[in-house]
Amino acid sequence: MGTVSIFAYARLGLITREDLREISEAVLSKSQLRAVYPYTRYIMSILYKEGESATPD
Image (cartoon, one colour):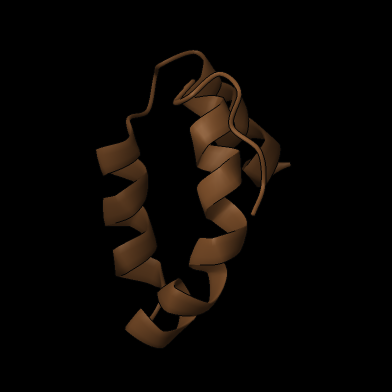
């Protein structure tokens, strides 16, 4: 349920990309961040409306 809340907060603009970055860096190691980045990049672009026609790689 927590993950869904984060997505909702992000979509509503209640939590910024910078906030999510700081949380991620506090919880995950650098190698873990590098591993999940390819998967989260597309999701983040949708949540924060970057490039409305963004498609996954």
